[in-house]
Image (cartoon, rainbow over all chains, first blue to last red; front, side, top):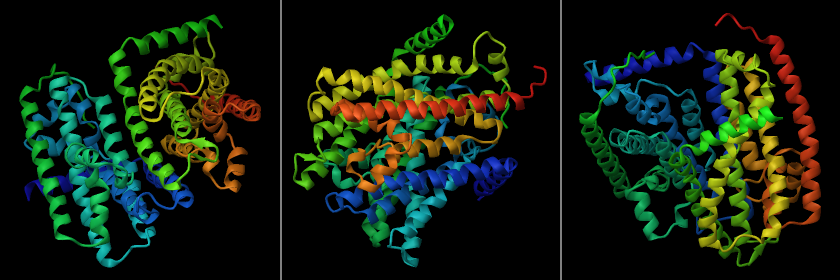
Length: 260
Length: 261
């Protein structure tokens, strides 16, 4: 409860700070909605020409795209530093968080808001309503799916970027990992063979950002919900363990830094 | 000219100084090419044909490789220039004995060339292994000439977006939309030949097709008419965008206020 209150205060401050530059904030959020919409046209054109890919149709793409955009947006809007944790580690900027009486990881992740994330999140919902499969029950499942997908996505980002404790670098590798999980998530899963699917479920958990939650949104299923919850818990546990193991190795030059 | 070549050389050497970084950045093309191959292999199999609108699976993959090389290796100057405008560091470039825009052109090229080379090399290995050998060497010169024109068009767009920082607080959304226009109207993810006829006509009347489709199509099918159309389109749009860039730069300079430093 204490951590939740802390998070709420942090988000409130972050949002107020971002809204100080209102025009920039709104232009990034609206720009991202347009960006996602225009990007999705590729799939509209593709399925207009080729109709389906091994049973995967345009309506499936709307769902997959909606969940991936929603999870990506939610991570950026509320845990914006999940995208540059490696830079913070290698730049010695964890000092600031270590000196405060709060969970280091939670504090660092939630200390930045990416304004375009709100655009991605909103686009996720637009994509869901455009899928032709919208219903009240479906909307509830969609929200739950986005929350679990976000947890898995953030856990994956922490895992990848915690390697910076050992490697001393990580920005480029992070970009590659983000590209990998998002790209795999928004392509029809029916394209991939069994070996690739093992990778997509266990190593780069893109299946939990696209195809699996999309299936859950289409129709409620306990096994699917269980698998998503298990994946979220498993990846989060791994991420926390690796981050805290890495934190023991953390060192910095005691540089004077200002966190704003 | 010599000073711009020196700037180009410095940036080239700077990029080559960290080969591991260059290689890691380029690895993303391996991922993209593999996924594209899965998608188009299934699509061609479902269509039950060797070629779709004259392009085989192998052609499509080499087309996509050239398009991705250009997209991932093109200059990323929009944010750099906008940052220079916003934080005032543009002042340090304006008082030097070179033109700001030509400086950006030379430095962008120096940064871009090694990246594009590495992307083409890595992606080429993947595409060759998955889809078959590259087009005959004779196809390469017209495609690479068009690639140079496309790169210049990308530079003009990037510089225009960067200079928009004189007017707008945030230029990132312009950059996103420009990139997605290239994706869709440039035929980056799907060759324009696969589009409905009306949309192909629309695309060919805009600059984006000459920034992506032209060079990529010439690489796999070097037809004279496509070559002439691409070059003429590039020259026309370079004149339009280059003129716009000169005007935007002049207008930006009149707005520029530098306070101490």
